[in-house]
Image 1 (cartoon, rainbow, N blue to C red):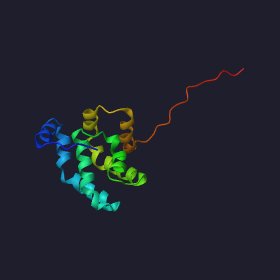
Image 2 (image 1 turned 30 degrees about the vertical axis):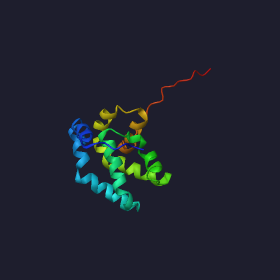
Image 3 (image 1 turned 90 degrees about the vertical axis):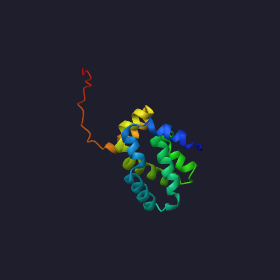
Image 4 (image 1 turned 120 degrees about the vertical axis):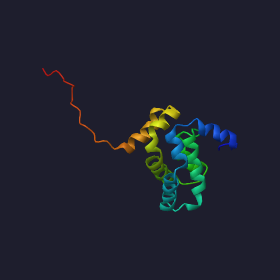
Amino acid sequence: MHRDYTQEEFWKLYNSLSPGLKDALFAEETGNNLEKICKRHQIEDKFSEILNLTGQILLGLLPPEELEKVLVRDIQLNIAKSKEISREIIRFIFFPVKDELTRLYEMTSSSEKLFKEEEQTPSVASKDTYREVIE
């Protein structure tokens, strides 16, 4: 579970954020995307809790790689739904500010993988440089 922060603590955290994260935190698009995600998964009653979790991630209080676990543990979503929802939140909300989130969290390679899944860059086949001696 998370702890509640005072208004003073919130604004101190907010003021330390990069401009992109500040914008994402209060952007109408962020709320609209979360609302669409909740509607699509028929969990409109969980909107405020998911909005709160998203805000915690944007503030640097909850690492993005923990979102899926927290959706299961705190919001009591099943694992499959939690996985889908966290993937959508990462894609539509966190991916546009991934560089700033990376700097904020100094992310581990496991959380960077979450963002790389969304980049969907075409793979380039590499040359096989392994040569075996044939007698």
